[in-house]
Length: 250
Ligand code: OAD
Image 1 (cartoon, rainbow, N blue to C red):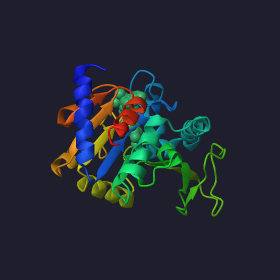
Image 2 (cartoon, rainbow, N blue to C red; image 1 turned 60 degrees about the vertical axis):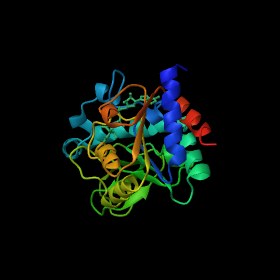
Image 3 (spheres, rainbow, N blue to C red; image 1 turned 90 degrees about the horizontal axis):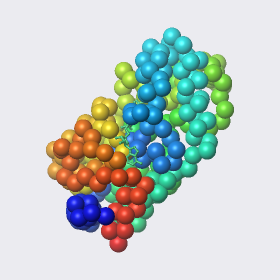
Image 4 (cartoon, rainbow, N blue to C red; image 1 turned 135 degrees about the vertical axis):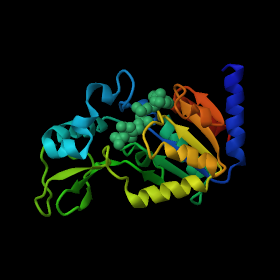
């Protein structure tokens, strides 16, 4: 580890040891080491697919089976995927170091891996691929990774189901978003992990945390749009950095 990296680790460790409440905002990068593809970048999901064709309500109205094929593929990928050391390090922070609702994970990920790892206070602001929502009766159901057809029907009313995730041009679920905003406004340390920080409103939480007085620590492979506003940046794999950071809390 070089000296600059060592110093950044020491600073991040100090921030966390002094903190009473910690909130982490995560993105696709935290699941990359589990084998879940990220969105942007050379082998990202948005390189192989056009957002307008698979990730908007207009796309779903135009061709629901094309959209479902895309998400069924992603659901199938999740069958072979397990949480990684980064997810587990966040569980340890919550349970051992910041219990009693003093730790929260706000995730943009729809893979459910934070909960699978054991995180308890998780706000999934972009929804979850393991749930469906009926476009007719609006019932939301946990379906896990059960195989669904390309035009799955609601077992209650026969309406067309959709994945219970947030698409571009859609609002975030209000209750989850309010809880996430509250966890951001009330923490002393805010971790930004594995997100390119370009998709709003989630990326706006970083500025909100700073405005509320939190110290912000970024963990990413590379610098991002958020790097200028953060207090400390740790650059490398989150599955390696997070366990190292947890060690500094003992
Ligand atoms: P992106 O694909 O935009 O960014 C992933 C980030 O993770 C990049 O900054 C990578 O450098 C970083 N990264 C990759 N591997 C990493 C690793 N092992 N350790 C640490 N960092 C790593 O994904 P998000 O920022 O999550 O929204 O994208 C935000 C939203 O855009 C998603 O929730 C999704 C997408 O369109 C919707 O679908 C609504």
